[in-house]
Length: 564
Image (cartoon, rainbow, N blue to C red; front, top):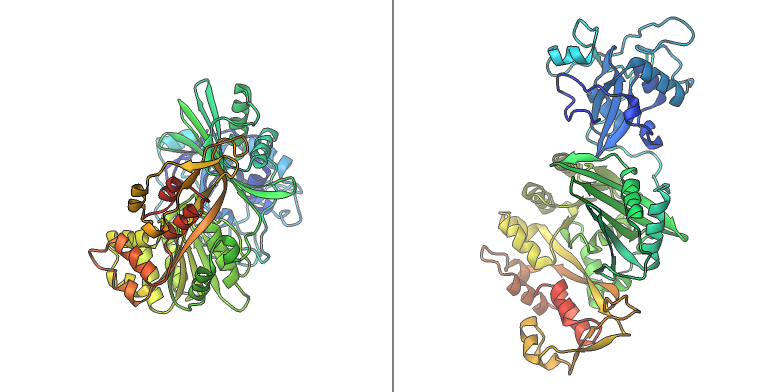
């Protein structure tokens, strides 16, 4: 049973603790033992970024607004029988020196029950009127429910509260810990790692199941992997569901959880996403190597000219630099490695993220935990700190973009992630969003765009039947057209994909005076890309075509991955 969505409703749902068992250890540890024993409030589950907590049905109820600071996010309350909660706390929360004082709700073992007055009574914006629904939920209760914070012990020094929307890091840098996962999921991940898969897709429709793995950029339905049985598919979905508490959205149950897994001494960051409806269950597992990407533009795939431009762009002390790429590209890892390079003890760096992806030393991290409104508030507050570098991941809304541009124009240095394929598309989108052209011209210092390109398999590479006249529309000069282009046919070596590996290609653009002139109401992306080349900088299409001319990739892959 799930509690109601809003804690401000006039009643809380009735539940039993057995509905939530077994309760994961990380959930039990959300509240300190002293708070649990003093106020009889038990965390029982997570639902997305919300915590579900259970309180007694015949006593005072802890106010969820006070618990939010402790839980680090929203808290939904439910009501359970007092004897169930007391028995559960005795079993799971042993008394400690810190928690041995008298409780406002929980009788002391040493003597009769005494009610300790709270340091400060917290009331809501308005008194909650008693309703018939409330009387049903609280049998035997004749008056209004006693709402109190119940979080401070007598004689306990008052602690300074942080703004409840800010995630405050510990003194020591946290490191991802290895998390145990069900055996069947580990077997599935070990199989994916063996073949270099970066995504696993499991679909269940009625009694029909299908498993596909994305290997070398291609989603394959058939492969040399284990043939999973229907019972194993069901176990995979059940095991994923057990990793976290699902929440409902538009009639769909949704579970999303991240884990770091070690497979044969190599770490992988794994993102599980499970959606469940009456007719269809879809599980996608995204797998990324957990090894740290070293700051080496040449090893990433940049040539000498691009490396020089890239390093000079990062060395600028003001302006907005947009890191452009799609979800499936590695632009996020590139952005974070650039932040690592910039982060030193003598600099003030702040990173504002919708979701915390990776902890970087010497950087103040603020995560909105998926809340877009909270993300905007965090951005406004941290821009006012005027850090040496502010990193924003991602920039989506017009007001957030303009705010960063204004501060960049005033002298702040900002890195922002932008969901576009290259610099020309980014400018076209900014103009279509209605962003002021003056801000675009003079606040953006440059762009770093990244795309992933699949290379032909050398074992099954064959001549491509592309006609010479077809290359004109692709953008290859006549004098550079080779006798033949090549593509992969598919063989056992490449699992019938036709591709051997994936490489990253980059477009590094510094906004000089000539490029700024192109930012007009009738902006044309094709013209902007031609000016980039005339200014001695390479576009993504230009770099990809060079690889096709050299026979490393196919023309169809060039067209797929880059814009003309």
